[in-house]
Structure formats: structure tokens, C-alpha cells
Image (cartoon, rainbow, N blue to C red; front, top):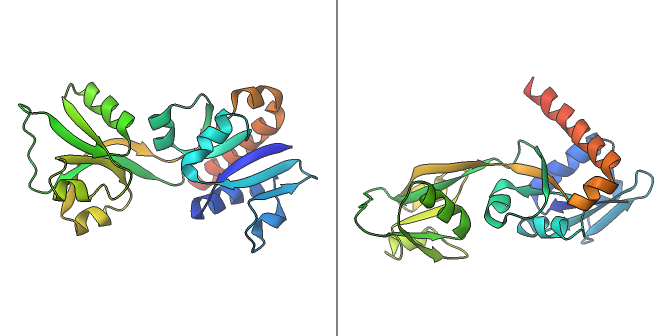
Length: 210
């Protein structure tokens, strides 16, 4: 059995469609129920729904052979996995945003609110800027409005939430998309199945982009 961790939600449904088209279908996954694990013994695959931010942990520790995680998670936590393929879905960007009238004063330490502390540190280290990280887990946009921080580092999709809170993007740090990842040991021992999936999905992506 090839164990596959899928992200819960719409992204996971798109990912499953790719696996299904690659010949790894599992009809029971489309049934309306609250089950989390689905398998198809005929094609040798077992799927399970996982919170997107946890997928890299399942794959790194071998509970899943492969999975799909956002590039943001891979950059933030640096899990010991193989990154096999950019699936070209779940696209957004990691960005620096602030109040529209913000002007950076390089003479003082920049206060940065974020849930992506490692990405923020790496970025500001690369431009040699002193920062004070304020780690938050939600509603990051409020921080600059209440003067808790000068800027935020967060995922931006449409930018609508920022605009509604009188914030704007000042810098894009890195583009983000969903990536196919593999457990290092599984990649060695289940290589044939995994390589088939990579090959078939790569063909789908090429056809889509033609």
C-alpha cells in the first residue's frame, strides 16, 4: 500500500483528481461521510485527509509515504523530506505588508508580526535588517493597526483582506504553491509507485500548460 496524505479542503480535492487521473483512483473517497482514511487494494493506495500544516510531519515520520504540502510549510519548518514536484496549484505568495502610510526607518528595529517566524528571519537576514519577531497564530492583520507591529509577514492570495484593513503589500518574499513531497525511506523502497505518480502528474501539468 502506498500511503498518501491529502490536505483537507478544496486543495485536497484538486490534488486527489490529479492522483485519480494518474491511475490511483479510490472511489470511496468521494462518498459523503466523515471517514478520514480510504483505500483501494486493487491499485495499492490508501489516502487520508490531514490538516495542511501537519502533512509534512506525517510524511517526515513515515506515517505517509507521500503527501502534498504548501511551499510555505516546507520553508518554515524545513522537514527532512524530498520535494518532488511543484503541482502548480494552491498558488499565493509570502509577502511583507503594512499600513499604506508606512515608511521604514532603518535607524530603528523593525517590529514584524507573523506566524512564519523562520521565513521572516531568513528574509530580513538576507537584506541585513534588524527585526523584532512577534509570533502570532491568527488575525495577523490586526497587529499593525493596533501598533503591535510595524509590518506583517503573511500569505497573500487576493489581497482583499489587506485592502479591507487599509494594509498593502510592500514586498513579495517568495511565491508559494502546493508541492508533492516524499518520505526519504519510502522513496527508496516504494520508488516504482512514487515515480509513476510523479511521471503521470508531470504529464498532466505539461498538457495543461501547452
